Image 1 (cartoon, rainbow, N blue to C red):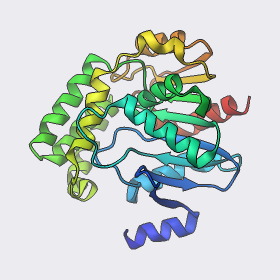
Image 2: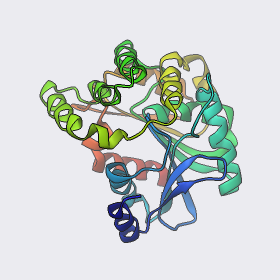
Image 3: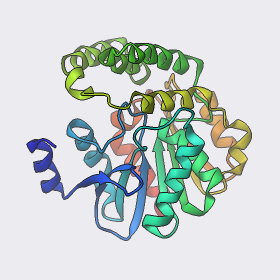
Image 4: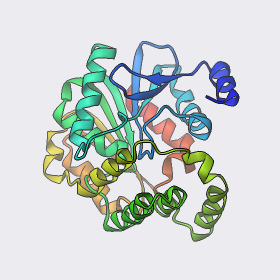
Length: 279
C-alpha cells in the first residue's frame, strides 16, 4: 500500500482488506444499515487503491449518514468456469456470515449482472436491489468490445486491454480519445502485475454468456434499474425489458448519458438511489 493510500484511508476512515473467504473489500461508514456494492468488471481481484479508492469514497460518502457502505469484489485465482452463479453464491455466503441478515445491494455493470443471480438465487440476503448500467444481457457491441479486450489481455498487452474497455464507457469519440491518451500514460502503473489472469477472463466470459431474460421474474425484491439511454453495452431496449421482467421494479433512464453514467451523473444517481432505499 502506498503512503498516499494510507493517508487517504486515515483521512476518511476507510478500511480495506480481504474477508476470510478471500473476497476483497473497502468499507466506509459506521452505521448499522449495510449497503453492499458489488464491484464492476475488474482486471485484478484486490481491494481498491489509488484512483479506485478515491472513486469509492466519492461514490459512497453521501450514503454514510444512513449506511455503512461496502464495495466487494471477487475471489482471487478463480478456476475455469467460475461464472456469475458461483460468484453470486460467494456474495450470499458472505452476507449471511458477516451481516447476519439481508442488506441493501447495488451493482454496477458486471456487478449488476452478478446481482441479478444473487437476487434470484438467494432472495433471503437482499432487502432492496439497485442495478446500474446493466441489463439481462450484454449487447452485441459490448461483446465485441470485451472480445477485443480479451485478445489483448491474453497476449499480455494489459494496457491495450484496459484501453479497449474504454470504448464501452465513453460514447463521445473526443472524450474517448482523451481518456485513452491519459490511460496509456499510466496504464502500466494502474494494471501492475497480473498474477491471476483467469480472474478477468472468467468475468468477461460471464458477461458474454449471460442471458437472464427468462429468470427475471424470479427477482422478487424491490428493484431500481438505472441506465443511460446512450449505453452501448446494455441497450435501452434491453434495459427496459429487464425492468419490465422484474415484478417489483422501477426504471430510471437518463438522457444524454452512456455506460459511464455512475461517474458522469454521480450526484443525481446518488439522490435517486437514496430516495429509492428510504421509501
